[in-house]
Image (cartoon, rainbow, N blue to C red; front, side, top):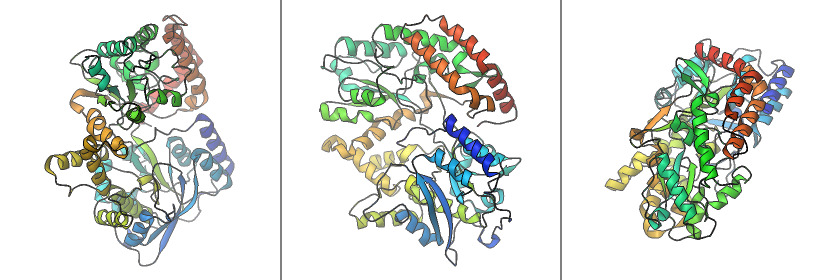
Length: 550
Protein backbone atom coordinates (compact mmCIF):
# COMPACT_ATOMS: atom_id res chain seq x y z
CA UNK A 1 0.00 0.00 0.00
CA UNK A 2 1.74 3.16 -1.16
CA UNK A 3 -0.42 5.71 0.54
CA UNK A 4 -0.61 6.76 4.12
CA UNK A 5 -3.59 6.15 6.30
CA UNK A 6 -6.48 8.34 5.17
CA UNK A 7 -8.48 10.03 7.91
CA UNK A 8 -11.41 12.43 7.93
CA UNK A 9 -10.65 15.97 8.96
CA UNK A 10 -12.74 17.55 11.67
CA UNK A 11 -14.06 20.06 9.14
CA UNK A 12 -15.18 17.36 6.74
CA UNK A 13 -16.83 15.47 9.58
CA UNK A 14 -18.77 18.55 10.69
CA UNK A 15 -19.82 19.32 7.12
CA UNK A 16 -21.03 15.76 6.74
CA UNK A 17 -23.07 15.97 9.93
CA UNK A 18 -24.68 19.22 8.77
CA UNK A 19 -25.43 17.80 5.35
CA UNK A 20 -27.15 14.77 6.79
CA UNK A 21 -29.32 16.95 8.95
CA UNK A 22 -30.20 19.07 5.92
CA UNK A 23 -31.19 16.15 3.72
CA UNK A 24 -33.44 14.72 6.41
CA UNK A 25 -32.90 11.12 5.35
CA UNK A 26 -34.34 11.67 1.84
CA UNK A 27 -31.56 9.58 0.40
CA UNK A 28 -33.05 6.39 1.82
CA UNK A 29 -35.69 4.73 -0.29
CA UNK A 30 -39.06 4.20 1.35
CA UNK A 31 -39.51 0.86 -0.43
CA UNK A 32 -38.21 -2.29 1.20
CA UNK A 33 -35.14 -4.05 -0.06
CA UNK A 34 -35.88 -7.36 -1.76
CA UNK A 35 -33.10 -9.92 -1.56
CA UNK A 36 -33.27 -12.28 -4.51
CA UNK A 37 -32.96 -15.57 -2.61
CA UNK A 38 -32.16 -17.64 -5.69
CA UNK A 39 -29.20 -15.34 -6.32
CA UNK A 40 -28.07 -15.31 -2.69
CA UNK A 41 -24.85 -17.19 -3.39
CA UNK A 42 -21.18 -16.18 -3.61
CA UNK A 43 -20.63 -16.83 -7.31
CA UNK A 44 -22.56 -17.22 -10.53
CA UNK A 45 -23.68 -15.29 -13.58
CA UNK A 46 -26.97 -13.41 -13.63
CA UNK A 47 -29.14 -14.42 -16.56
CA UNK A 48 -29.72 -10.77 -17.46
CA UNK A 49 -27.33 -7.81 -17.11
CA UNK A 50 -27.57 -6.08 -13.71
CA UNK A 51 -25.82 -3.05 -12.25
CA UNK A 52 -25.36 -0.71 -9.34
CA UNK A 53 -23.83 2.75 -8.99
CA UNK A 54 -20.78 3.64 -6.92
CA UNK A 55 -19.01 6.77 -5.71
CA UNK A 56 -15.22 6.42 -5.55
CA UNK A 57 -12.12 8.14 -4.31
CA UNK A 58 -9.46 8.74 -6.94
CA UNK A 59 -6.23 6.96 -6.02
CA UNK A 60 -3.17 7.56 -8.21
CA UNK A 61 -1.60 4.24 -7.36
CA UNK A 62 -1.32 2.41 -10.64
CA UNK A 63 -1.70 2.88 -14.36
CA UNK A 64 -4.24 1.66 -16.86
CA UNK A 65 -3.43 0.26 -20.27
CA UNK A 66 -3.85 2.67 -23.17
CA UNK A 67 -7.51 2.70 -24.15
CA UNK A 68 -8.71 1.52 -20.75
CA UNK A 69 -10.69 3.73 -18.41
CA UNK A 70 -12.02 3.52 -14.88
CA UNK A 71 -15.30 2.31 -16.40
CA UNK A 72 -13.76 -0.16 -18.87
CA UNK A 73 -10.62 -2.01 -17.85
CA UNK A 74 -9.56 -5.63 -17.16
CA UNK A 75 -11.27 -5.64 -13.74
CA UNK A 76 -14.62 -4.35 -15.03
CA UNK A 77 -14.49 -6.79 -17.94
CA UNK A 78 -13.69 -9.70 -15.63
CA UNK A 79 -16.62 -8.81 -13.36
CA UNK A 80 -18.98 -8.63 -16.32
CA UNK A 81 -17.71 -11.93 -17.74
CA UNK A 82 -18.03 -13.82 -14.45
CA UNK A 83 -21.23 -12.31 -13.03
CA UNK A 84 -22.99 -10.17 -15.68
CA UNK A 85 -22.70 -7.29 -13.20
CA UNK A 86 -21.74 -3.80 -14.33
CA UNK A 87 -20.71 -1.13 -11.87
CA UNK A 88 -21.61 2.38 -12.98
CA UNK A 89 -19.23 4.95 -11.52
CA UNK A 90 -21.48 7.82 -10.51
CA UNK A 91 -18.54 10.04 -9.57
CA UNK A 92 -14.88 9.96 -8.71
CA UNK A 93 -13.04 12.58 -6.70
CA UNK A 94 -9.75 13.17 -4.94
CA UNK A 95 -11.61 15.08 -2.18
CA UNK A 96 -13.75 12.13 -1.16
CA UNK A 97 -14.90 13.46 2.21
CA UNK A 98 -16.16 16.72 0.73
CA UNK A 99 -17.87 14.92 -2.15
CA UNK A 100 -19.74 12.54 0.15
CA UNK A 101 -20.95 15.47 2.24
CA UNK A 102 -22.16 17.33 -0.83
CA UNK A 103 -23.82 14.22 -2.24
CA UNK A 104 -25.75 13.78 0.98
CA UNK A 105 -26.86 17.42 0.99
CA UNK A 106 -28.43 17.00 -2.46
CA UNK A 107 -29.88 13.57 -1.78
CA UNK A 108 -27.82 12.01 -4.58
CA UNK A 109 -26.22 9.02 -2.87
CA UNK A 110 -24.83 6.18 -5.01
CA UNK A 111 -25.99 2.63 -4.38
CA UNK A 112 -22.57 1.71 -2.96
CA UNK A 113 -19.71 3.58 -1.31
CA UNK A 114 -16.59 2.62 0.60
CA UNK A 115 -16.52 5.08 3.50
CA UNK A 116 -14.42 5.96 6.53
CA UNK A 117 -15.37 5.77 10.19
CA UNK A 118 -17.03 9.16 10.72
CA UNK A 119 -19.04 8.82 7.51
CA UNK A 120 -20.13 5.32 8.51
CA UNK A 121 -21.31 6.60 11.89
CA UNK A 122 -23.31 9.43 10.34
CA UNK A 123 -24.93 7.15 7.78
CA UNK A 124 -25.87 4.75 10.57
CA UNK A 125 -27.26 7.47 12.81
CA UNK A 126 -29.48 8.73 9.99
CA UNK A 127 -30.70 5.25 8.95
CA UNK A 128 -29.40 5.60 5.39
CA UNK A 129 -27.69 2.25 4.83
CA UNK A 130 -28.88 -1.31 4.37
CA UNK A 131 -28.73 -4.25 6.78
CA UNK A 132 -26.32 -6.74 5.20
CA UNK A 133 -26.56 -9.51 7.78
CA UNK A 134 -28.26 -12.08 5.54
CA UNK A 135 -26.36 -10.97 2.46
CA UNK A 136 -23.04 -11.62 4.21
CA UNK A 137 -24.11 -14.87 5.89
CA UNK A 138 -25.41 -16.45 2.69
CA UNK A 139 -23.59 -14.55 -0.04
CA UNK A 140 -20.02 -13.89 1.11
CA UNK A 141 -17.41 -16.22 -0.35
CA UNK A 142 -15.36 -18.54 1.83
CA UNK A 143 -12.26 -16.52 0.96
CA UNK A 144 -13.85 -13.28 2.19
CA UNK A 145 -15.24 -14.88 5.36
CA UNK A 146 -11.94 -16.60 6.20
CA UNK A 147 -10.05 -13.34 5.73
CA UNK A 148 -12.37 -11.25 7.90
CA UNK A 149 -12.46 -13.84 10.68
CA UNK A 150 -8.66 -14.20 10.72
CA UNK A 151 -8.07 -10.89 12.52
CA UNK A 152 -7.75 -10.65 16.29
CA UNK A 153 -10.38 -7.92 16.41
CA UNK A 154 -14.09 -8.59 15.84
CA UNK A 155 -14.43 -6.83 12.48
CA UNK A 156 -18.05 -7.89 11.99
CA UNK A 157 -18.95 -6.64 15.45
CA UNK A 158 -17.28 -3.30 14.76
CA UNK A 159 -19.31 -3.04 11.54
CA UNK A 160 -22.62 -3.87 13.25
CA UNK A 161 -25.25 -1.99 15.20
CA UNK A 162 -27.91 -3.60 17.38
CA UNK A 163 -26.84 -7.02 16.14
CA UNK A 164 -27.20 -6.11 12.46
CA UNK A 165 -24.25 -6.06 10.06
CA UNK A 166 -24.40 -2.64 8.43
CA UNK A 167 -21.28 -2.80 6.24
CA UNK A 168 -18.71 -5.17 4.81
CA UNK A 169 -15.49 -4.31 6.67
CA UNK A 170 -12.19 -3.85 4.90
CA UNK A 171 -9.49 -4.72 7.44
CA UNK A 172 -6.47 -2.52 7.82
CA UNK A 173 -3.59 -4.87 6.91
CA UNK A 174 -1.19 -5.97 9.61
CA UNK A 175 2.54 -5.25 9.35
CA UNK A 176 2.07 -1.58 8.41
CA UNK A 177 4.00 -0.47 11.50
CA UNK A 178 7.02 1.80 11.26
CA UNK A 179 10.49 0.31 11.34
CA UNK A 180 13.98 1.81 11.00
CA UNK A 181 15.65 2.07 7.60
CA UNK A 182 19.41 2.65 7.63
CA UNK A 183 22.29 3.03 5.17
CA UNK A 184 24.22 -0.23 5.50
CA UNK A 185 26.98 1.12 3.27
CA UNK A 186 27.52 3.96 5.75
CA UNK A 187 27.66 1.51 8.64
CA UNK A 188 30.31 -0.46 6.79
CA UNK A 189 32.21 2.70 5.87
CA UNK A 190 32.48 3.70 9.55
CA UNK A 191 32.91 0.10 10.81
CA UNK A 192 29.68 0.24 12.82
CA UNK A 193 27.37 -2.63 13.70
CA UNK A 194 23.71 -2.58 12.73
CA UNK A 195 21.96 -0.80 15.63
CA UNK A 196 19.59 -2.78 17.84
CA UNK A 197 18.86 -0.50 20.80
CA UNK A 198 18.02 3.17 21.21
CA UNK A 199 21.55 3.70 22.52
CA UNK A 200 22.98 1.94 19.46
CA UNK A 201 20.92 4.09 17.14
CA UNK A 202 21.95 7.22 19.02
CA UNK A 203 25.61 6.32 18.59
CA UNK A 204 25.21 5.51 14.89
CA UNK A 205 23.39 8.77 14.20
CA UNK A 206 26.05 10.71 16.07
CA UNK A 207 28.82 8.98 14.14
CA UNK A 208 27.07 9.60 10.81
CA UNK A 209 26.88 13.33 11.57
CA UNK A 210 30.27 13.85 13.22
CA UNK A 211 32.19 11.84 10.61
CA UNK A 212 30.09 13.15 7.72
CA UNK A 213 29.18 9.71 6.42
CA UNK A 214 27.50 11.23 3.37
CA UNK A 215 30.64 13.06 2.29
CA UNK A 216 28.52 16.14 1.56
CA UNK A 217 29.76 18.17 4.51
CA UNK A 218 26.20 18.41 5.82
CA UNK A 219 25.12 14.92 6.89
CA UNK A 220 21.89 14.77 8.90
CA UNK A 221 21.08 12.36 11.71
CA UNK A 222 17.40 11.59 12.32
CA UNK A 223 14.51 13.71 11.13
CA UNK A 224 10.94 13.74 12.47
CA UNK A 225 7.54 14.89 11.29
CA UNK A 226 6.73 18.48 12.10
CA UNK A 227 3.69 17.21 14.02
CA UNK A 228 5.75 14.45 15.70
CA UNK A 229 3.07 11.81 16.13
CA UNK A 230 0.69 10.95 13.35
CA UNK A 231 -0.73 7.49 12.92
CA UNK A 232 0.54 3.99 12.22
CA UNK A 233 2.63 3.83 9.09
CA UNK A 234 3.18 7.61 9.01
CA UNK A 235 6.71 8.18 7.81
CA UNK A 236 9.18 10.08 10.01
CA UNK A 237 6.86 9.58 12.97
CA UNK A 238 8.36 9.89 16.45
CA UNK A 239 6.08 7.21 17.87
CA UNK A 240 8.66 4.51 17.15
CA UNK A 241 10.89 6.06 19.84
CA UNK A 242 8.18 6.83 22.42
CA UNK A 243 6.78 3.29 22.15
CA UNK A 244 9.98 1.74 23.50
CA UNK A 245 9.34 3.56 26.81
CA UNK A 246 5.84 2.10 26.92
CA UNK A 247 4.55 5.50 25.80
CA UNK A 248 1.80 5.87 23.19
CA UNK A 249 1.24 9.52 22.23
CA UNK A 250 -1.96 10.36 20.36
CA UNK A 251 -3.36 6.93 21.28
CA UNK A 252 -5.93 5.59 23.73
CA UNK A 253 -4.58 2.46 25.41
CA UNK A 254 -5.48 0.24 28.35
CA UNK A 255 -3.45 0.83 31.53
CA UNK A 256 -4.23 -0.65 34.94
CA UNK A 257 -7.69 -1.68 33.80
CA UNK A 258 -8.83 1.64 32.34
CA UNK A 259 -8.35 3.56 29.12
CA UNK A 260 -5.80 6.38 29.26
CA UNK A 261 -4.59 8.93 26.72
CA UNK A 262 -0.97 8.07 26.04
CA UNK A 263 0.21 11.63 25.52
CA UNK A 264 -0.41 12.60 29.15
CA UNK A 265 1.14 9.53 30.76
CA UNK A 266 4.55 9.83 32.55
CA UNK A 267 6.23 7.42 30.11
CA UNK A 268 5.74 10.02 27.38
CA UNK A 269 7.75 12.49 29.43
CA UNK A 270 10.61 9.96 29.45
CA UNK A 271 10.50 9.79 25.65
CA UNK A 272 10.49 13.59 25.41
CA UNK A 273 13.55 13.77 27.65
CA UNK A 274 15.48 11.50 25.30
CA UNK A 275 14.42 13.35 22.15
CA UNK A 276 15.26 16.66 23.83
CA UNK A 277 18.79 15.40 24.48
CA UNK A 278 19.11 14.02 20.95
CA UNK A 279 18.13 17.40 19.53
CA UNK A 280 20.62 19.24 21.73
CA UNK A 281 23.40 16.87 20.63
CA UNK A 282 22.61 17.30 16.93
CA UNK A 283 21.27 13.78 16.47
CA UNK A 284 17.86 15.12 15.41
CA UNK A 285 17.83 17.53 12.46
CA UNK A 286 17.80 21.06 13.88
CA UNK A 287 15.26 22.14 11.26
CA UNK A 288 12.88 19.18 11.52
CA UNK A 289 10.01 21.41 12.67
CA UNK A 290 10.22 23.74 9.66
CA UNK A 291 11.38 21.59 6.75
CA UNK A 292 8.63 20.33 4.46
CA UNK A 293 8.12 16.60 3.99
CA UNK A 294 9.34 16.94 0.41
CA UNK A 295 12.54 18.60 1.60
CA UNK A 296 13.10 15.83 4.12
CA UNK A 297 12.55 13.12 1.53
CA UNK A 298 14.93 14.94 -0.80
CA UNK A 299 17.58 14.75 1.93
CA UNK A 300 17.34 10.97 1.77
CA UNK A 301 19.06 11.08 -1.60
CA UNK A 302 22.43 12.12 -0.18
CA UNK A 303 22.37 13.67 3.31
CA UNK A 304 20.44 11.25 5.50
CA UNK A 305 21.20 7.64 6.43
CA UNK A 306 18.45 6.88 8.98
CA UNK A 307 14.77 6.95 8.15
CA UNK A 308 11.62 5.95 10.03
CA UNK A 309 8.92 4.44 7.83
CA UNK A 310 6.88 1.30 7.08
CA UNK A 311 8.08 -1.53 4.86
CA UNK A 312 6.72 0.29 1.81
CA UNK A 313 8.29 3.64 2.74
CA UNK A 314 11.04 3.49 0.14
CA UNK A 315 11.46 7.21 -0.51
CA UNK A 316 15.18 6.64 -0.30
CA UNK A 317 15.42 5.06 -3.76
CA UNK A 318 16.87 8.26 -5.27
CA UNK A 319 19.99 7.75 -3.17
CA UNK A 320 20.86 4.85 -5.48
CA UNK A 321 21.12 7.37 -8.33
CA UNK A 322 23.41 9.62 -6.29
CA UNK A 323 25.66 6.86 -4.98
CA UNK A 324 26.29 3.54 -6.71
CA UNK A 325 27.24 2.06 -3.33
CA UNK A 326 23.96 3.01 -1.62
CA UNK A 327 22.51 0.09 0.31
CA UNK A 328 19.50 0.59 2.59
CA UNK A 329 18.38 -2.11 5.01
CA UNK A 330 15.40 -2.29 7.37
CA UNK A 331 15.71 -3.04 11.09
CA UNK A 332 13.05 -4.44 13.44
CA UNK A 333 13.71 -1.76 16.01
CA UNK A 334 15.13 0.05 17.82
CA UNK A 335 14.38 -1.56 21.19
CA UNK A 336 15.00 0.04 24.57
CA UNK A 337 17.45 -2.54 25.90
CA UNK A 338 19.21 -5.47 24.24
CA UNK A 339 16.96 -8.52 24.35
CA UNK A 340 13.74 -6.47 24.51
CA UNK A 341 10.99 -6.87 21.96
CA UNK A 342 10.29 -4.00 19.59
CA UNK A 343 7.09 -2.33 20.81
CA UNK A 344 4.67 -1.01 18.22
CA UNK A 345 0.95 -0.36 17.84
CA UNK A 346 -1.47 -1.91 15.39
CA UNK A 347 -3.55 0.01 12.92
CA UNK A 348 -7.25 0.77 13.07
CA UNK A 349 -9.00 -2.61 12.75
CA UNK A 350 -11.34 -1.50 9.96
CA UNK A 351 -9.83 0.72 7.30
CA UNK A 352 -13.03 1.37 5.35
CA UNK A 353 -16.65 0.17 5.29
CA UNK A 354 -18.48 -0.89 2.13
CA UNK A 355 -22.04 0.33 2.60
CA UNK A 356 -25.17 -0.13 0.52
CA UNK A 357 -27.83 2.57 0.21
CA UNK A 358 -30.96 1.73 2.16
CA UNK A 359 -33.67 0.66 -0.22
CA UNK A 360 -31.34 -0.64 -2.93
CA UNK A 361 -33.27 -3.53 -4.43
CA UNK A 362 -30.69 -6.30 -4.59
CA UNK A 363 -27.78 -5.94 -2.12
CA UNK A 364 -26.79 -9.58 -2.76
CA UNK A 365 -25.47 -8.31 -6.11
CA UNK A 366 -22.98 -6.08 -4.27
CA UNK A 367 -21.72 -9.00 -2.18
CA UNK A 368 -21.14 -11.08 -5.29
CA UNK A 369 -19.22 -8.23 -6.88
CA UNK A 370 -17.07 -7.96 -3.75
CA UNK A 371 -16.31 -11.69 -3.88
CA UNK A 372 -15.26 -11.48 -7.53
CA UNK A 373 -13.12 -8.38 -7.02
CA UNK A 374 -11.33 -9.92 -4.03
CA UNK A 375 -10.49 -12.91 -6.25
CA UNK A 376 -9.43 -10.63 -9.09
CA UNK A 377 -7.24 -8.40 -6.94
CA UNK A 378 -5.51 -11.39 -5.35
CA UNK A 379 -5.16 -13.19 -8.67
CA UNK A 380 -6.78 -16.45 -7.53
CA UNK A 381 -9.19 -18.89 -9.12
CA UNK A 382 -10.29 -18.03 -12.65
CA UNK A 383 -8.98 -14.49 -12.11
CA UNK A 384 -5.35 -15.65 -12.22
CA UNK A 385 -5.53 -16.87 -15.81
CA UNK A 386 -7.62 -13.85 -16.80
CA UNK A 387 -5.08 -11.38 -15.40
CA UNK A 388 -2.19 -13.16 -17.09
CA UNK A 389 -4.02 -13.16 -20.42
CA UNK A 390 -4.73 -9.43 -20.16
CA UNK A 391 -1.09 -8.70 -19.36
CA UNK A 392 0.12 -10.89 -22.22
CA UNK A 393 -1.85 -8.78 -24.71
CA UNK A 394 0.51 -5.94 -23.79
CA UNK A 395 3.69 -8.03 -23.63
CA UNK A 396 3.82 -7.85 -19.84
CA UNK A 397 4.07 -10.53 -17.20
CA UNK A 398 1.89 -8.71 -14.65
CA UNK A 399 -1.24 -6.61 -14.78
CA UNK A 400 -0.53 -3.06 -13.55
CA UNK A 401 -3.95 -2.64 -11.97
CA UNK A 402 -4.53 -2.60 -8.22
CA UNK A 403 -7.66 -3.00 -6.13
CA UNK A 404 -8.00 0.79 -6.02
CA UNK A 405 -8.87 0.94 -9.72
CA UNK A 406 -11.24 -2.04 -9.75
CA UNK A 407 -14.96 -1.25 -10.28
CA UNK A 408 -15.63 -1.78 -6.58
CA UNK A 409 -12.48 -0.74 -4.74
CA UNK A 410 -12.14 -3.47 -2.16
CA UNK A 411 -9.12 -5.16 -0.61
CA UNK A 412 -9.75 -7.96 1.92
CA UNK A 413 -6.83 -10.23 2.79
CA UNK A 414 -6.10 -12.59 5.66
CA UNK A 415 -4.27 -11.24 8.68
CA UNK A 416 -1.69 -14.01 8.52
CA UNK A 417 -0.94 -13.40 4.85
CA UNK A 418 2.25 -11.40 4.89
CA UNK A 419 2.17 -8.25 2.77
CA UNK A 420 2.30 -8.62 -0.98
CA UNK A 421 2.69 -12.40 -0.88
CA UNK A 422 6.10 -12.56 0.79
CA UNK A 423 5.80 -16.23 1.75
CA UNK A 424 5.04 -17.26 -1.85
CA UNK A 425 7.95 -15.20 -3.17
CA UNK A 426 10.33 -16.62 -0.56
CA UNK A 427 9.28 -20.14 -1.50
CA UNK A 428 9.78 -19.42 -5.20
CA UNK A 429 13.26 -18.02 -4.51
CA UNK A 430 14.19 -21.19 -2.62
CA UNK A 431 12.62 -23.76 -4.93
CA UNK A 432 12.29 -22.06 -8.29
CA UNK A 433 8.61 -23.08 -8.34
CA UNK A 434 6.55 -20.04 -9.38
CA UNK A 435 3.22 -21.87 -9.74
CA UNK A 436 1.76 -20.38 -6.56
CA UNK A 437 2.61 -16.80 -7.47
CA UNK A 438 -0.02 -14.34 -8.64
CA UNK A 439 0.84 -12.46 -11.83
CA UNK A 440 1.94 -9.44 -9.78
CA UNK A 441 4.13 -11.54 -7.54
CA UNK A 442 5.74 -13.22 -10.53
CA UNK A 443 7.07 -9.81 -11.55
CA UNK A 444 8.13 -9.00 -7.97
CA UNK A 445 9.83 -12.38 -7.69
CA UNK A 446 11.84 -11.65 -10.83
CA UNK A 447 12.81 -8.21 -9.47
CA UNK A 448 14.05 -9.62 -6.16
CA UNK A 449 15.92 -12.41 -7.90
CA UNK A 450 17.53 -10.29 -10.61
CA UNK A 451 18.17 -6.86 -9.04
CA UNK A 452 21.53 -7.75 -7.40
CA UNK A 453 22.87 -8.59 -10.88
CA UNK A 454 21.03 -6.14 -13.13
CA UNK A 455 20.80 -3.10 -10.79
CA UNK A 456 17.71 -2.20 -12.80
CA UNK A 457 16.11 0.85 -11.14
CA UNK A 458 12.62 -0.33 -12.08
CA UNK A 459 13.15 -3.40 -9.86
CA UNK A 460 14.58 -1.50 -6.89
CA UNK A 461 11.42 -0.84 -4.88
CA UNK A 462 10.31 -4.47 -5.08
CA UNK A 463 13.81 -5.53 -4.09
CA UNK A 464 13.78 -3.25 -1.04
CA UNK A 465 10.25 -4.33 -0.05
CA UNK A 466 10.92 -8.02 -0.16
CA UNK A 467 14.61 -8.30 0.50
CA UNK A 468 14.62 -6.26 3.69
CA UNK A 469 11.48 -4.16 4.38
CA UNK A 470 8.85 -6.85 4.81
CA UNK A 471 11.39 -9.13 6.48
CA UNK A 472 11.81 -6.58 9.28
CA UNK A 473 8.10 -5.70 9.53
CA UNK A 474 6.99 -9.34 9.81
CA UNK A 475 9.67 -10.55 12.22
CA UNK A 476 7.00 -11.29 14.81
CA UNK A 477 9.36 -13.11 17.17
CA UNK A 478 10.98 -9.76 17.86
CA UNK A 479 7.84 -7.60 17.97
CA UNK A 480 5.34 -6.84 20.73
CA UNK A 481 2.16 -5.55 19.11
CA UNK A 482 -0.08 -3.30 21.19
CA UNK A 483 -3.72 -2.90 20.22
CA UNK A 484 -5.18 0.47 20.99
CA UNK A 485 -8.29 0.49 23.13
CA UNK A 486 -10.18 2.99 21.00
CA UNK A 487 -9.69 4.36 17.50
CA UNK A 488 -12.76 6.50 16.88
CA UNK A 489 -14.01 10.01 17.63
CA UNK A 490 -16.36 10.80 20.50
CA UNK A 491 -18.64 13.88 20.32
CA UNK A 492 -16.27 15.92 22.49
CA UNK A 493 -13.29 14.85 20.39
CA UNK A 494 -14.97 16.25 17.28
CA UNK A 495 -15.44 19.58 19.05
CA UNK A 496 -12.21 19.85 21.03
CA UNK A 497 -9.53 17.67 19.51
CA UNK A 498 -8.16 20.19 17.02
CA UNK A 499 -7.21 22.62 19.79
CA UNK A 500 -5.95 19.88 22.10
CA UNK A 501 -3.73 18.37 19.41
CA UNK A 502 -2.36 21.83 18.61
CA UNK A 503 -1.58 22.36 22.31
CA UNK A 504 0.12 18.97 22.50
CA UNK A 505 2.20 19.39 19.39
CA UNK A 506 3.38 22.90 20.22
CA UNK A 507 4.31 21.86 23.77
CA UNK A 508 6.22 18.76 22.66
CA UNK A 509 8.08 20.58 19.88
CA UNK A 510 9.20 23.35 22.22
CA UNK A 511 10.36 20.83 24.82
CA UNK A 512 12.36 18.85 22.26
CA UNK A 513 13.93 21.97 20.78
CA UNK A 514 14.88 23.29 24.21
CA UNK A 515 12.61 26.31 23.94
CA UNK A 516 10.65 25.16 27.00
CA UNK A 517 11.76 23.18 30.05
CA UNK A 518 10.88 19.50 30.36
CA UNK A 519 8.68 20.44 33.32
CA UNK A 520 6.26 22.07 30.86
CA UNK A 521 5.03 18.54 30.17
CA UNK A 522 3.31 18.58 33.56
CA UNK A 523 1.67 21.92 32.74
CA UNK A 524 0.50 20.46 29.44
CA UNK A 525 -1.15 17.53 31.23
CA UNK A 526 -3.07 19.91 33.48
CA UNK A 527 -4.12 22.09 30.55
CA UNK A 528 -5.14 19.12 28.40
CA UNK A 529 -7.37 17.72 31.11
CA UNK A 530 -8.94 21.11 31.91
CA UNK A 531 -9.58 22.05 28.27
CA UNK A 532 -11.74 19.02 27.51
CA UNK A 533 -9.42 16.06 27.93
CA UNK A 534 -11.16 14.76 31.04
CA UNK A 535 -14.49 14.85 29.23
CA UNK A 536 -13.01 13.00 26.27
CA UNK A 537 -11.53 10.33 28.52
CA UNK A 538 -14.92 9.77 30.18
CA UNK A 539 -16.57 9.38 26.78
CA UNK A 540 -13.88 7.01 25.52
CA UNK A 541 -14.05 4.83 28.63
CA UNK A 542 -17.85 4.70 28.35
CA UNK A 543 -17.58 3.68 24.69
CA UNK A 544 -15.02 0.97 25.44
CA UNK A 545 -17.16 -0.32 28.33
CA UNK A 546 -19.95 -0.81 25.77
CA UNK A 547 -17.61 -2.80 23.56
CA UNK A 548 -16.93 -0.08 21.00
CA UNK A 549 -13.51 0.09 19.36
CA UNK A 550 -13.87 2.54 16.50
